Length: 510
Ligand code: XMP
Image 1: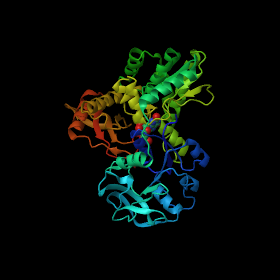
Image 2: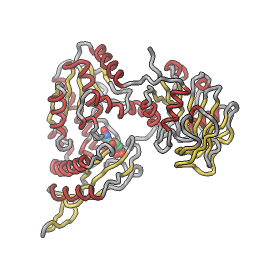
Image 3: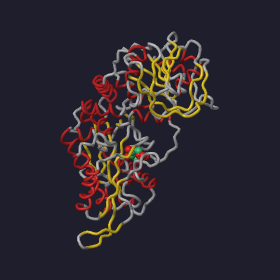
Image 4: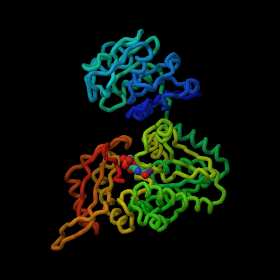
């Protein structure tokens, strides 16, 4: 039986992935595709509801992203959010114009009619606005269902055609009852039961992997990160020892990480794990290199060489497991953003390797991957591990990477992470780590002058790493970290805290 599916057409808004995550949290399977998805493909998906996202364009711009009018005539409920609503108005005979001033932030939304979208929300609630255009005239057949002081048409609906539009962002936490609005759309308006369930997903996926692999051999590059770990364990449950995992120590790992990965996968999960100590190879190639992108390229390239050698040793391998997650797929299908840093996933492999890919997480968001990890019995330290870049400490020792600097950074970083963990903040922060700059500063310890490295603590809160806010860590905690680092780590005499958000900063320093 076909599962219920909601299609999200992506117009490039910054909150778009949140829409999809919220829909999934409401137990409805959804897929996000570029706004220009072909009409026939849309029909073939057989969606039970369509959501048009927000986006940065104005409908009046030349080449503004549009919509195939036939999609609006399918009789399937459509919810246009922000730009999506303006698109409905523009295409159906309404009028969209630039607002006198851009509206950004929370606004009081007054509900004007008994609209099924707003069931259970009362007469007024707070809605999050972020738009430069607004609707001046609604299209024929529509009625205005909500307003704010700045937006006389803050929501509209054509009940006959099952078309709904909201100027605000229900997916954002600042819209109180935003989840309820999405729930109303899915359950009341689209009539969905909500049949997306991760327990079933695991069973179906394991079965599919078993059928695909048969009695062949499968290889997986394990990094200790959440995605590759969950992917490996899922494949292991499907085919047991036909899976071989390769774990490459590139010398750029954090303190205790190698032992943790080996203990978890080899001893605890009983996975066939090949451990490769390639520290010296990486350090040799990084000697004298200072440019961050060059370092990334070298680390990625060396990884591939090591991995290829190991793969050859293992004999004929037909499949390769990758921990690709849904945001990777969405971004590669939609993104026009320029590369600010090459987020070279070190698991990325050369085109000429002759494997068929198995990507068991390709349809999942990170939060879903974590839930699956827990269900599969992977220890919490791995499932809730913060993201760690593929090039590892190679981009946190700024400029030239040496063993001496890596050891200093590892010791400081371990204290930062230990204290964050001890304060119970691990899950609240996107990342917390230490960075070692290539300068030295003067200090005084006991009776003598020191001349040693400073270390920078970086801690951020984020939903998706696209934007991030520097974490307001308690002063007491910062103080403890600073004292401990300076006292316990030879080679460091000063601690700084980075109070830059993203943008304009990035999360990493290189
Ligand atoms: P930035 O520094 O661009 O980082 O704000 C955003 C997120 O990406 C991670 N990051 C990387 N991940 N390879 C990776 O696999 C990389 O080269 C890389 N650079 C940054 C970073 O840790 C943060 O979570």
